[in-house]
Image 1 (cartoon, rainbow, N blue to C red):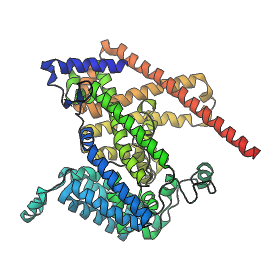
Image 2 (cartoon, one colour):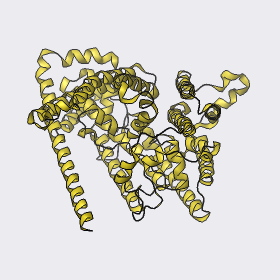
Image 3 (spheres, rainbow, N blue to C red):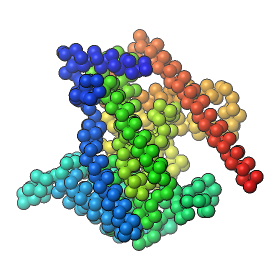
Image 4 (tube, one colour):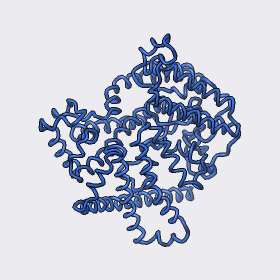
Length: 530
């Protein structure tokens, strides 16, 4: 409530006074109590304005797909053909003639994979091929047909509704997934999963449980290669262009996608999916309320932060982070909801509330979780995993920054995050040693944990302020204002508030663990009685 009140006061001061109102970019007429709403974020503005059309497309495609699946018994390659046809229409509308660029690149990737998969050099060539086009697409802004000859200039007149090289970031991840999944199937790469332990714990994968016969969980679908016949051109193209996940994900691996064309997901019932959709609607109403009353993003991108007090800068930065979390939650859950209706399960991207993460590792595992799992599977483990953890963090976050965009502010954000992650990794490694087992049971450990969590949250806030609010150019000005002598009490108060918040998070976590343990004990007793 305090953060909300401060933000509302700042918004009123900056917007309602006519001379200052011009400083806030992206405010549009709203529908709640005659207030303006903050539509300064391009992603959210485009998604929100396109929501009616996306909903209509979702309904049409899902109904048609369900009818074909039930009436004609389509599965496997049959459903791949349907989704390739339907998704091609969708992608041609989005990108127009630029679909030709996409086809040229993805067919080159398919030829490379089929020709060299199974050879030691293939993973390196695959990554070089995809990174080259990832960077090149951005540098040349998606290319111009005219640059290949004046006779092709007319094709530039129909480039579609969405820039293809922005959406291609997701396609690139799928291209790598197809290539490496096929490569590992060729060499019979052993999985890192303990399947005996997994089968004991996973209800979906445990045979004999009612209603789950022949089913598998997402992890099992991802890790186990599909039959060799399913690594074909039709399924490959259907996977790359699959309409529900094409624009924003969540990211799904080729193995998981292809296996669900054959046998649809059973992890979510129709009731579960309906409740999921209702929860999405409630979150949408929440962000509508937020953007009508708190202009976090408009204050951040309009440069107004330079005229605010350090406390107001901190609150705006915190608000931007929460707005981003809610925005991405809505975008990713909409497309995941669409995929679930179609019978394709993907990972939940936002697995935990932003304000319930007190360390960097938990934060990144729960923010864009499907991307995190992707990076672990296709980068972290192939690079050596935990043996080279400190080096891998730098490589992976640099890739993440470049994958998002070629901007210095994103590289700055990535490297600041890596610097913050170093001490956390060291402390966690130390805490795993046998010598620390007794210390972890003491109150002193709990206090140290809370203090470290508060410092981590502060560092995360500063990294995101640099990456998404002030940029690297504003870092010096921000540091000079936040670290001045008169603002030391404010900084201590901020860290103390995070300390209290971390203790609350730890208490909630302990309660959840105890509840889970109690349920396991009750279940074990029932099994013994039976």
